[in-house]
Length: 70
Image 1: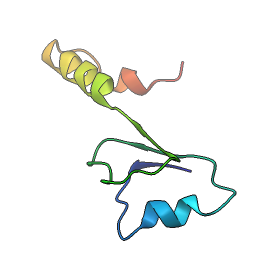
Image 2: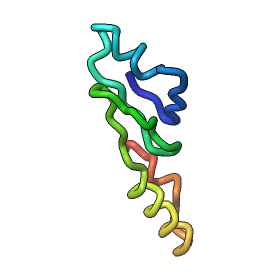
Image 3: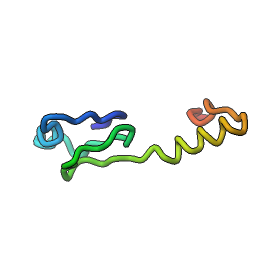
Image 4: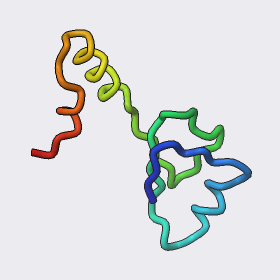
């Protein structure tokens, strides 16, 4: 499973992790991760993307180029 803003409340991680089909839960750190993340939760940092976007804004470069696939 994947999400960008993981607002896991009320034991959501435990409930999702209980499904055998769910091998991993991946989310970004755009919001604080849960206090008890569990074994299946992987939190990815957006720090490098955010810092590169700020650098590009500072130097007047394209931010949308960060999301270009070609």
